[in-house]
Amino acid sequence: PLPWPQSFLLKSLEQVRKIQTRNSELLEQLCATYKLCHPEELVLLGHSLGILQAPLSRCSIQALQPTKCLSQLHSGLFLYQGLLQALAGISPEVAPTLDMLQLDVANFATTIWQQMETLGVAPTVQPTQSTLPTFTSAFQRRAGGVLTVSHLQTFLETAHCALNHLV
Amino acid sequence: ESCGHIRISVPIVRLGDPVTASCIISPNCSKLDQEPQILWRLQDGPEQPGDRQRRLHDGSQESTITLPHVNHTKAFLSCLVPWANSFQVLDQAELQAGYPPASPSNLSCLMYLTTNSLVCQWEPGPETYLPTNFTLKSFRSRADCKYQKDSITDCVPKDRQNTCSIARKHLILYQNMVVWVQAENVLGTSESPKLCLDPMDVVKLEPPVLQVLDMNPELVPRQPGCLWLSWKPWKPGEFIAQECELRYQPQFGGANWTLVSHLPSSEDQFKLCGLHQAPVYTLQIRCIRSPLPGLWSSWSPSLQLRPT
View (cartoon, each protein chain N blue to C red):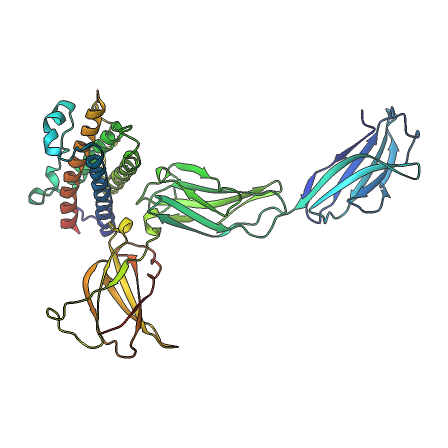
């Protein structure tokens, strides 16, 4: 497969770090504000809400397939962008951080999509958002926030390894 | 119903251009003579007759005057008639003159990570003497900035400043956008040259905090003319890969700076030696995004240190 340009890889790594920083900030705020500090305690709820990990199997170092990894990266970012949008209105305290995080994720998705277009591997039609969770309580929305953000953090760690591997 | 009424060809003209005005006195203005001589006064100048006065078919009197060169940026033009030993002002019109805006210049932009906004500033160009609106315009593009993808909401500066701040929600970071300034008044419109930039390439980085370390002599033997330093990157810019440079100079008049380049953006223990020229040295550090494009931060506040 075509090598990815250095500037794309460096920018993507920077974007991953930017989002990870924002992510940690949001997790800290959710923990401090709502005492929801352990995502592992919310796995059951996650299943019922349909908040699952976005797959990045093609980006794992052992089975790295750059082009398919790009596609999974974009789909995952697109999913998390939607999930973050569904969390709007969580609370005034975290809203600013959530807004910025959503923009950063959206911009990273744009970077990936453009690289797919450059490589000629972008689907002809932009993806459409799958059905997003509906929260029936403030607790569900906050817990959904913790889950989404912690999944995103894991997702980004895998992405960071793959990108680092390709630099 | 007032007796007289002024009409002006163009109320706002370019400084030095001519302007033509006419004053019409209605026939049913009973208190005046049948055919009063219509006079004109510019600002507080002398009264002067018009270039031509004639009677219109409806019996009203019209005087026309052309001012060959308007050289007041603001002036009042009055239409009068003689009255007893004085005059009566029948109507007054405000004349304005100025220049169309020149192209704004020196447009530059900085991305502030603390406010998440792209702030652009420019020089407005020479005074126009007329109300002139400046608008920061931009659109998203692709790598080469040739094609417009989608436009971004115009950024209108607050109270006549020559700077405008584009909010984060309008920006796509890591993508190129085109930015320029438009200036507009009644006499014309002009545009600055266009800038093609990725907001992340113009991040306003702040320098790290430079600190001196007090090393335990039992662990680290004292070496004359040395200092132990540490620094951490500016927190909002922590995610940006950077390289830094340190400069130091002995504290006596006319001393030169010595530069230490290509330093990491974070350093827990850095030994700087060779400081024998003076008892006290001044040190500063600055950083730049690297290897991706970026701008140097300012130098950190000076540290006055005494080497071992």
